[in-house]
Image 1: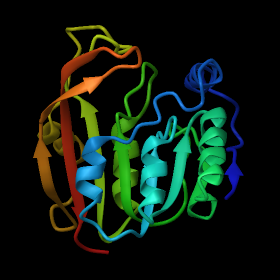
Image 2 (image 1 turned 90 degrees about the vertical axis):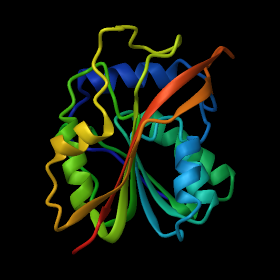
Image 3 (image 1 turned 120 degrees about the vertical axis):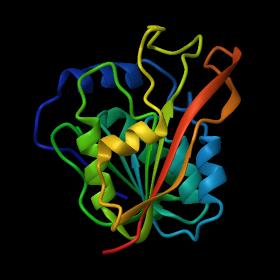
Length: 216
């Protein structure tokens, strides 16, 4: 288990998320995304990249299922907390935590599963470019799972009800991946009952895009 930092200084996004993770209980929000469980449970554990790992619920679930996970976040505090949690759970050998500002760099390697779950930010982020890079980081036969907010929950940081929520097909169109090299396995907008950090519940919509790399 290692912790890496990128050479660039903290961006506005980096400072924001550092303050966020320094001001809350390390275990707060450490829940696995149910869509990840649904999709990854049917896959053989191999190598995974968790983009924007945050509190680490998805990383820890994947490692617990036998995946070797590279957990990435713009906050070094977040990645340190994830690394500590992995070690405490006996999963240290399966988790590598790295700080990266994805606006400036991307982790090295090829992966069998890349997750970008709610990789949405109040700061400028070249998200389409990041997701294209993530698609190119897939090994042949591997998958990129993108889950976005398709609605605004009462506890969302973004309460702009006029905000755009691109559909899964619109996200895929923006990526402009060659259909000879990548295929869409799932593009859906399921509804579910979610729980917020204060215990409130609400129906939310998720935009789910699952892409598979079909060639090397």
